[in-house]
Each structure stands twice: as C-alpha cells, then as structure tokens.
Length: 404
Ligand code: HSE
Image 1 (cartoon, rainbow, N blue to C red):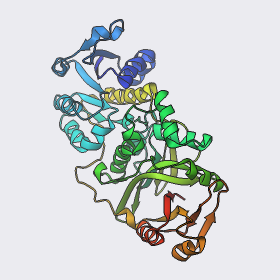
Image 2 (image 1 turned 60 degrees about the vertical axis):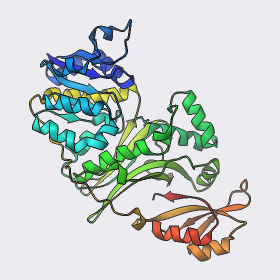
Image 3 (image 1 turned 180 degrees about the vertical axis):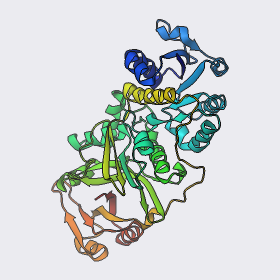
Image 4 (image 1 turned 135 degrees about the vertical axis):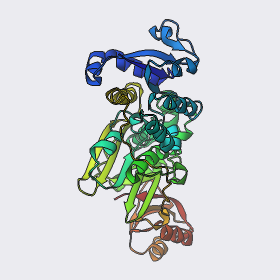
C-alpha cells in the first residue's frame, strides 16, 4: 500500500480525495499498488466529512511519517506551499501539484531537489487543468524540436470573451455575471489581467526551451480593455477575440507573450469556448497538434493531480526525467515580431485618407452602429513599426493584434 497525503482540502484537494475514492480499483490497478490517503492537511475542520479523521493541522506529522511516499500539494500560492514542498522533497517524498504560481516561480529548484532525493515533482494540473499537456511535452513529443506553443490557458477569461461575443455585452457586465455564477473570483485580477495565463505559458515555454523562462519577463496584457464595440468589428470581419498565451522559437530567439488577439473562423482555437482551454503545439517533425478540454474545475484538475500520483507510484525511488534547467532564457523583444493589427480610429482626429497614408495598404472596416469612428486592418508590420505609426496618426481608440 502506498500512503498519500493531501495538502489543502479546498476545491482541488477535496477533488483529489473524491477521484481516488471513486476510481479506486482502476487507479490501484494502474498504479501497480493500492493508494491510501493517510492524511489531509488543513487548518480548518470539516465536521461530518469522512476526511475529518485524517485531518492534521501540523505539517511535521506528515513530513516525519516515513510511510508517506506521495504528497498532493493543492494549497495554491507561494507560502507556505514552497516551504512544505521543499521539506517534503528533501525527505524523499514525491510532490504532485496544481500550483502554477509555485511551479512558475521555483520549478527548476524543486525539480533539482526531487532529482537529488530520488523522488518526483510533477505538475500536470498546473497548466490546462485536466488537459494532458505537461506529460505530452515531457514524454510524448520528445523527438520534436518544439518551436511554437499557442494556448487559451485561462477558463475565466475565455468564458467572459465567449459571452461578450455571443451576447454583445460589455466586459464589466459579463464579469459581474461570471462572479455571481462562481466562474470568476471576487478579485478577478489574476485572470482578467492575464497573470494566470502568464504563469502557465512560462511553464510551457520552459518545457519548450528546456531552460527557465521567467514569468516576469513575459509581456502580458489582459482583457479589461476589450469592449462590445471590438466584438462588433470582430463579427464583421468573421473573427473573434481570444486571450492567447504564446511562445515561439525563431532561430536562436525565443518570444513569449500573453494578450488578446483577433482570430479568424479558420483558426484552430476559434471554437474553443466558455471555460474550455486548448493548447496548440507545433513541432518541427510532427507539425501541429492540439490538446483540448476542461482547463479548470474541481474534478478535471484533481484528475490531473491523481494522474501524477499514479506516475509517482510507478516510480518510487526513481526520478522521472524532466528537462528544465536553472539557466534563465533571455526572451527576445516582442517589438521585433511582425503581424497584422486591427485599429479603431477616431474619425474626428484622422480620416481614412490620412490613416492609409500612414499605415500604407490597409483594409477599412465600417460598422453602421458605430458613428464617428472606423476600423482598419494593417498589413503585417512589427510591433515597433505599428507603435510608431499609431503615434503618428494620433487618433487610435484601440488596437488588437491579429493572429493569423
Ligand atoms: N482561474 C483559472 C482559470 C483556474 O480560470 O483558468 C485554473 O487555473
């Protein structure tokens, strides 16, 4: 019997207990041994819940118990999860986590500790919830040189953008509704400002580069400035707006960013709606592959944590290889990246002629319901060139990048 402890009995932690209980026979068969949840660590009490008898409030009891081989860290946040994880790994206990903040901030160090102590630090649930994406990058696509990853990595913002698209509603109204329904946090900043997607693409980028991509270095723009008017234009252009997290390798350079993008109906991520996530990976031999599913939620995320527990159970005393070196990657300036842009222009400040004079070849888009402005789609140009032209025009209401 393999003894497991769960750190944090919140949404994901209670999901882990539920998944292990519900799929017990299948999981034990796949793990090659029986899994038993011996402890649950939480400062709260859960009277009436069977977990109460396994509940401990002092982490040392678990860390000092030589019977415990595997820990599910489902606490979230950096502290005290970082300290608890380090102490567990130093004792040779494997840790399986859904904690993207911790993986993005301290991944290489925790992986090294796992290697040095012949155990594992696995983090399938940290990106894309229940979607397998870490394991495909680590185990399945090992023959590939991955040169591009583009994903919808945040369920909350995808839900909001999908609603704005379908209902023509404004950001603030949809956010409020999403908060009422529990799809968005009371403090939605991490999601709507793109910080959550930034942590997740930092993790995927590191697995792509095999070195450390610091999340702090990734250009990040959220969805708070996207309006109902933007979606009117998007519809007219047969497009929609998605918050994309992307990472690209061109020659010796790596680019990474998170921002809202216009994508056309032909784009593989166009139909990824509501709280669903998808990750589109390009390898130099395979070409494109895509991973799609529930990127958040109790049971999908818990399922990914438990898949890591099974992996640990299959590798007791042995570290599963994960290449993510300490060395930081110097990301290239996104100002060099070339793409098309959609711009909304204030007609009282600049007319079509002036806009075309500055932007060169451009397609004009007009919406009857939006007087006093027009939209235009530029030819491909670098971010830097676009910025200069936009300033020269001096009449830009807003701009959204286009992902072709
Ligand atoms: N807030 C996150 C999301 C939860 O909406 O995707 C999963 O990481």
